[in-house]
Length: 381
Image 1: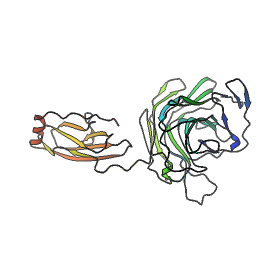
Image 2: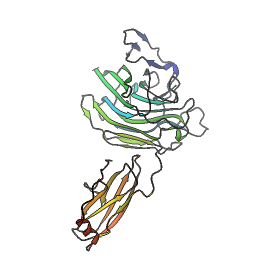
Image 3: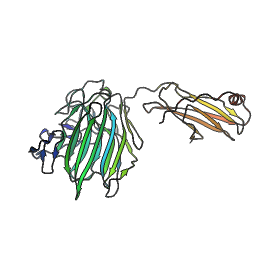
Image 4: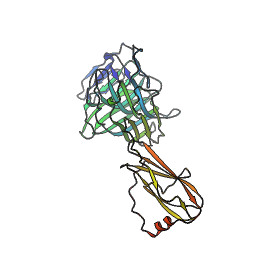
């Protein structure tokens, strides 16, 4: 079976009823108080390697298996995470068809670097993993260890554009043992997939967002544009909020290469794939090429990008006032003016002008005499 933690023997992967609790003794307690015992796994796991193919037949052309792109943040020393929360919208369904053994996973979550269990996360899935799913979106909460056991809560069906919330929270921590509540919630449908698991492992690594796939052989099998995580929140073992500085990674030499890219801020992680081709001629500076010392002149960027983010620089220094489509600037010496324009897919273009500061300019004079043009709203990048 293909899980978000790699390949497992089907007998080692267990569905846990929504709301149930899993103890360290492998006893599952349902909401109604009844319980049953999960048998110990008798087969080794085959953990996926990031961005690499794991298969018996290594003579066939490589296909995408494992983590394709992700953002992570690690705590140092003895610190560990006790909570994670993230929001995201379910992407549109992939245009390409899926067959047996092809799965797309995306998730935030927590990961251990040593010890026994190593993933705990809310997961969005497209494709059949050997136990559930198909050519539609489903979501479930997962907890898997390194080869001996892997559990998920009863999956829920979700639709494209559904507003998703995933949380991972530790409670009742004593002597390193915690009760972890994993919730994958569809806020649009008001449904959720959740369970509680007792765990003694430590989780010093947070994943702000990841795309993990198995058997995908065409870019059309990825959702167009990507998946975008927001409202990311982390807390440590003292219950204090953590401000991450995410490191971003794209798997080396993926095949096929589907324009994977990752960008991140403190509270967001954007995982891009299959963005459309960028527009042509979509960043042009309009304005004077020369000006008088200490004069104030006006420039604007001509662009055919609807949802654009703008950044002006003067001699490679970002101008705080230049985050809109227009720029007013005064200088005493010649300078290089540059504008960068991003579209909604993270693609960018730029234009550059050398501005001579030496003599008067009729255009600058006319600009000052005319009413200043109305500002168009800036879209933050």
